[in-house]
Amino acid sequence: MMKTDSSENKSMESTSDLPSQSFYHGTKANLKPGDLIEPGFKSNYGKRKNASYAYLTATLDAATWGAELALGEGPGRIYIVEPTGPIEDDPNVTDKKFPGNPTKSYRSRHPLRISGEVTDWQGHSPEKLKAMKDHLNHLKQLGIEAIED
Image (tube, rainbow, N blue to C red; front, side, top):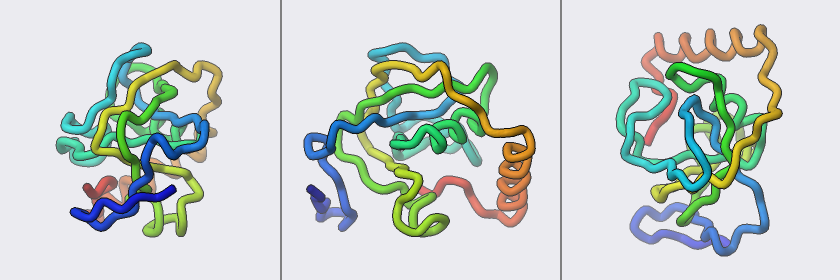
């Protein structure tokens, strides 16, 4: 069931209405079950401004990109997360880049609770990763921000 937040007139999905779905968050942060990923901290991407949203996805591929492209030291990690409030389609990838939401990418103004970690994920090929990084660098040179809040 979809709910509309009248203050922003955006489609919002109540977490209580979600099917039993797994959600993921890719990052380089070293976290543990029970930790929260919260909006309001520096983003892992772009100009590193404070993020207004916490991001999540229902696909391991999108989470893999998040883990591989996140700024910071250490290995990429993919966490299994549970939204603690409503989520909405992530406009950074939906409609602008991929009509509809084939990447099943979402965002929330509420924290994401870590319930586990995916440890057996496979990264993209070095060629595919380089192509994505080159593309992101090209967008940066054009002044296009990776994340628009």
